[in-house]
Amino acid sequence: MIANRFRRLGLAVIPLLVASTVAAAQDKDRTLRIGYQRSSTLITVLKSNGGLEKALAPLGVTITWHEFTSGLPQLEALNTGNIDFSADVADTVPIFAQAAGAKLAYVAQEAPSPAAQAILVPADSPIKSVADLKGKKVAVTKGAGSHYLLIAALAKAGLTSKDVTSAYLTPADGRAAFVSHNVDAWVAWDPFLSTARAQNNARVLTDGSHGLASYKRYYLASESYAARHGDILKVVYDQLDETGKWVKAKPEDAAKLLAGIWKIDPAIAAEAIANRSYKVGHVTREGLSEQKQIADAFYAAGLLPKKVDTTDVTLWQATN
Image: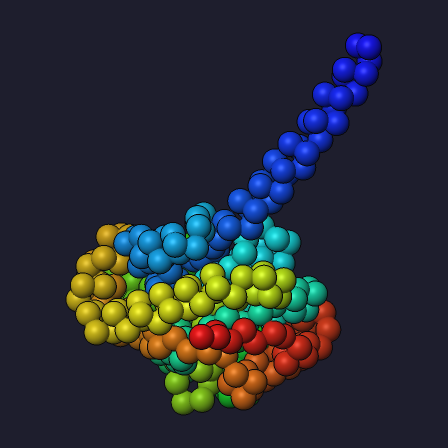
């Protein structure tokens, strides 16, 4: 009789365990894990003002925030399922993720901002042109948009990556090497670029203008997340769009807010803001045309293990 009682109790507990497991899965499914970087301006504003949490609350969605030093580890986390949504990474980064087998969905893009990344040298450096970088040591973040700028600039000057010594460093380590003169040049993007110009008297050797590198930034999710959570991504997209318009319409207010977060002078934050478009839009096949050029350039430089079909991605579109 005792055995029968335990069997009955066990059978009674099973539905409770199943219900508990389903509830836990549903709770997890309504948590949005966002990866971002210091340069992820629009997401940084939304994180600071709580705008995204407020907008997603009616859908029962909670947010966790995960900061990364650069784009590659951020998309590695997306590929391995450790985050759900990747705030703006440079155009180069999804290509490396694709080479690693990631199934990506492009959710949104920021219009080109070619002046928001540049090759920097000290103000008193004898280096006057990109051609003068031959034989020099250059700090660059591997796989970042700035890395493609370096490759493109060298190619225009008749050089290749083999003509310089590349020191692959994070932005913080790159700046430290630049300031201590352990490298001859540093390829940086905003807000690191504007900070180095103001605080370290850095001189721009060249930026992405004149067709070198348009420098788009992309927002991505995994294919599986985009397929399941279009309602969540629609809210995120709309919030990014509104925030981008606010930053450009109220640059002084945005600079004050970001200066406190970035721990820089508001004037420097304002310069960094001026260099970026912050114009959010949907990604189109035609708009990805430069991705093929970037992928081919990295493959030719021996930095990608295989050729990448940059069109083999999902383009998420908001539906009304």
